[in-house]
Amino acid sequence: MRRLLAVTVAAVAAAGLLAGCGEDKNWTKNCDTTANLVFECTAENRPQVSDISGELLDGGSYRVADDRGKVVVVNFWGSWCAPCRAEADDLEKTYQATKAKEVVFIGVNNRDDRDSAINFERGRVTYPSMFDPDAKLAIQFDPTQASTPGTLILDRQGRIAVAIRRATTLAELQPLVERVAAEALPTAPPATQKRTEGGA
Image (cartoon, rainbow, N blue to C red):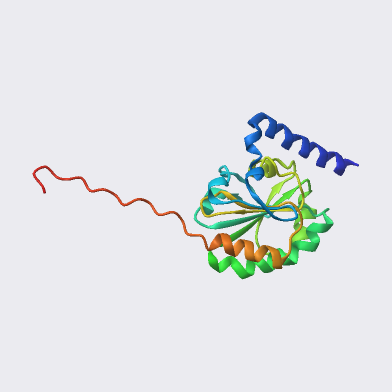
């Protein structure tokens, strides 16, 4: 009952944020639904993620902006979540298969206690997770994010390129990550040289 209440509170908080920011914050309406609860966005429709930072489960901290220029895969999970357990192996396999392409994975553990979360991670995944007991970080990543599990793929500019609103698999996730990783960063326009006085 307490967990249901926590989920409900998080959903209401997300809805409140959405209403406060205006309907345009529901960015998924401008994106393609390529599979059940999978949203893929073209570059011009990708929302920018703010500079989010938080505490890691095993100590230390993580800041999203430190990985700008890389593809960041963000997975929302809880030790109490059966689908999260089911997808953990596939997340780890995708991480191992793509990390050489400048792809990083970060988990966001929400509505959980630290010991249970650490025990869940042990032997399942090798990438770090942020500790988010009040589900506040999840809403900072995406005001429309109210599902656990869920996964976001951020492009190299820190924008949401893909959102998966349910558990995922290796067969589904790896091609999506590789597609975003293959995108080229926009090139800066060439600098114009100032003409020196008396020069040609």
